[in-house]
Length: 200
Image 1 (cartoon, helix red, strand yellow):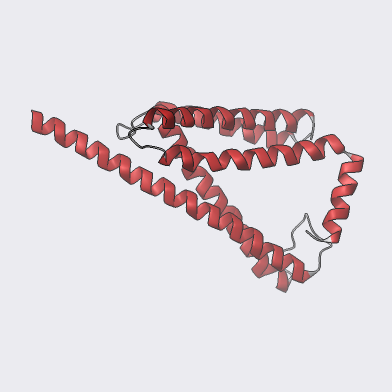
Image 2 (cartoon, rainbow, N blue to C red):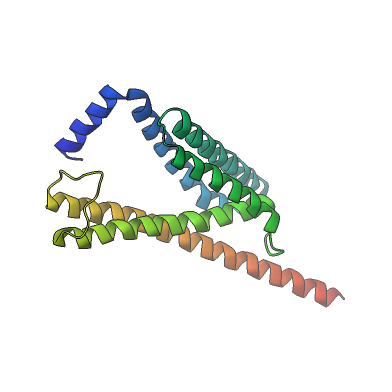
């Protein structure tokens, strides 16, 4: 974080402290909840299976609560209704996912957490690629990040590389977790089907 960003943050904190603090608080909380999704998927040991299911349910409750608070804040505090509408649409789509659970998924919470992990992996990778694109296109003047127009070109490139790497690495980890868990569910479903056929 450079001097200009610190000055900008202080200006926002002075002029609009409630929206500023609300935005940062929700952002931090949502990133913390995002980190719970891989943990909720991989916590599947025989001794902690029930506990793992509880973690999945708690993770979903925290995620939905965070999205609803985020939407209400966008409508009432930050006054950005478009972002609030997007958050509500995400909640609605997440609820619809529960009704299309395939047979290979052992429970509804696991299925919803798995789908959310896939979505977050794609979102992180897309966000990281956007930052990398800014890094590549900023030197030739094609694009300039609207949130930091006054920064020197070197800092724009540096922040694009660092931020893009953070999002892409997180997206890759989420993607690997989702792939491994999906393959495990498929194997478990195949073993179950084979067991039923042998019994017959």
